[in-house]
Length: 562
Image 1 (spheres, one colour):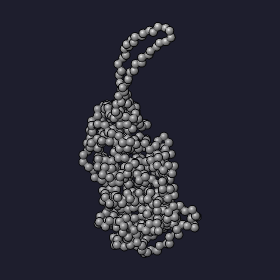
Image 2 (cartoon, one colour):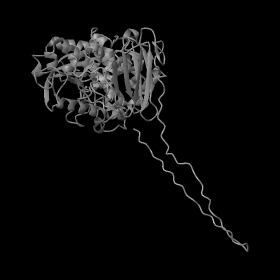
Image 3 (cartoon, one colour):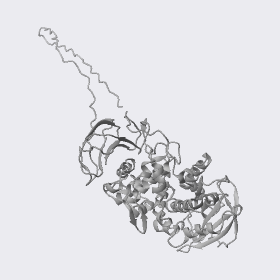
Image 4 (cartoon, helix red, strand yellow):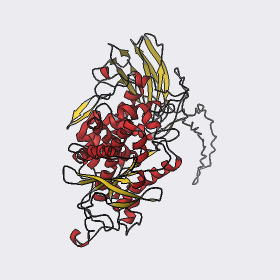
């Protein structure tokens, strides 16, 4: 996240017909006039037309080589998936009858398209009314309203705000007008650093290390925190980021340089920029968590353009989290460096190089950063995965689950939707299904300025018969039904993947750690959000499961049996 935290009918038309009678008169010449008498005629009564009742396509198997034997039968012992999409333009009834399901778990799942839809009346056979706890990491991330506002402000500045201050593109050559490269900074040098709260903090350069490509990585510690952030903490952070095969190398392997050539007048020099990792006490509240790290493109500007700028390619980490959260805090900070490093890289690659209009929308910007966490996790700590151990847990458990959330409307740790868990869980699914080449393509693709279109095109490039809608559907079916990994059909599930030197561990939604925290909706939603989903579990089904359900327009109804 930009500002990482540890861790929300059809109406009837009546037709009226009018009848008109026409009288004709004739005459002429010298012939005697004749008279005509109108003969009354009878007509059948007019019956108003009645709109046709929309008819949905029948339920059909939605998996290959699985236990969905045909449109109405389950066989074997694995997973069966059926689906039907309502393309009629109006809500329609769908009869369901699937035999051979005695003793099986049955999940109904609505997955919506682009427009909000009214939900039909539905009985919920499984009701969970109590609220779940967030995962430990995300629970510590819940922060103040001011923190959330600051994160959103930084995200919007990184997406668009910087461009108005960048001074336009140079006409002359780089060598004539580019800002001079920075001077090398010696150990124990001091510098004041502008922080998001408007204060300036004095910090000392305590350690530095060249990365594999020669880029110097500096660690600065706020002077007031020197007694709390000792050499072991600094050394572990620096080694994790800058050593061979570390976070910096993973970032550049996946997405290229974090900074480089550009043609803007008011951005810092293109060459010889070190990466500064600056440790400050963010909020001085004596607690770990809240906002624990951020990248702010403001500091890539020259001070002449904005006096607040630190004129530095820099990431910022919270000292209290490092000091007070122990090993969990250090692990979170390493993930934060990977996450915020991707924001730094996206800022250069998509906004500065390609042009501001190619910047990802927030939902995809955050998804791409969490996908980087996913790829980097195993190398940072083989016992941990950011999606498996945090995002997917929170997707299932916060509130009554984050199922009915608009993927394209990012709300952070919102009251009804925890968007980090939604975007992160979907991103982890795409990582495992489509792989590293897909991810690299997504990061670099500039074939459209629309983020959803870019993602759709990247998916199609990796899997030509698929796209955004198809992968979103398979992800919601996988996650909302807690589909067992061992019997997930092809194109479903979170399978393990080794790709380009990265290890993505298997995620099994059927594990007790997920079943014990999943919170199904306690009431039927009034509306189904765009790209949202709504699961309903049916228990105690007989040999044949039969039910007729109403499906909103533009929505797909899936049935999962295992």
